[in-house]
Every structure is written in structure tokens, then in C-alpha cells.
Amino acid sequence: MAYARKTCFKCGMSKPSNYMEQRVMKTGTGQSQNVLTFGTWFGLWFGITVSKNRIKRRFFANSRRGYKRKAPRWICYDNECNVTIHGERIGNEIRISGEGFLDEIYDDIRGFFWQSFLVVTSFTIAMSIWVVGLVAFAFFFWGGSV
Image (cartoon, rainbow, N blue to C red):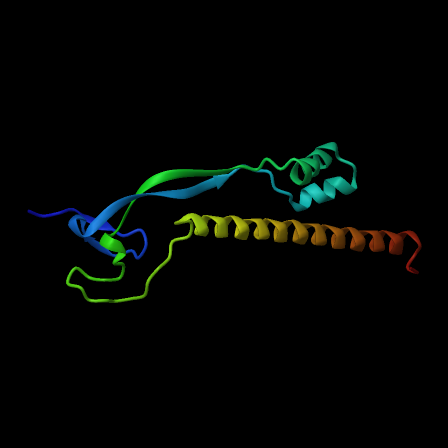
């Protein structure tokens, strides 16, 4: 009797299904759009109401939601990744992000710092562009002597 071939979600090896097991894993599928972009900071400096509301919502009532689902995944039996069906080892162990309680906390913390980095970076870029524009305006307004 022949078994269907399945591909391991962790290591990518293709083996017959009797050497694999199916596990239900939580995977992230997306996030709601509540991000700050250059246009948001640009609109804030010119007093656009939509930009003001978006910044208030982002910093004071952040309701950005992450979407996850539980999906069945095929993995090597007994977590024997990178091992052929004859027992030969051909690689290193691979860790999947988001598997286990501590790994989910780690992923959440990493996502928080990444979002913080993006906010600070976009604010810094918007401020530098604003300062350059202000200097250019003053340069042309006062005729070349700043």
C-alpha cells in the first residue's frame, strides 16, 4: 500500500504520510490597518483632522488587531526534522516562530519593539523633512541669507 507524500512545515522535507503527523498550529494571517505613515505626520503639521484622529487613536486608544487562525500542518513524526526515512540526519533543528507559550510571548514582544521602531523612525523622517522644508522656505523668503 502506498502512502501519500506530505511536506513538513518545519524543515520542508517530503516524506510518506506514515512518517508524518498532522498538528494544529496557530498561524498569524494579518493585522488591521492602523499604522502611521509619512502622510499622517505630513497631515498633522498642516492641521488635517483625519491625521490628528489617526495619531490619537494610535497612541491613546490602540485597537490594532492581529488575526490568527488554527491550521492543520504536517510535520515530521516525533519532531524528527531533517532525518530521512532511513534514519540519516541531513541538517540542523529548526524552530517555528509562535510554537509554545513562551515563544508566543517572545513574538509579541518582538512585534511591539518593531512597531515602536517604525513609529519613531517615521516620526524622525517626517520631522527632518519638515525642518528641511522650513529652512528652504526661509532661504527663499529672505532672499538667500538665513
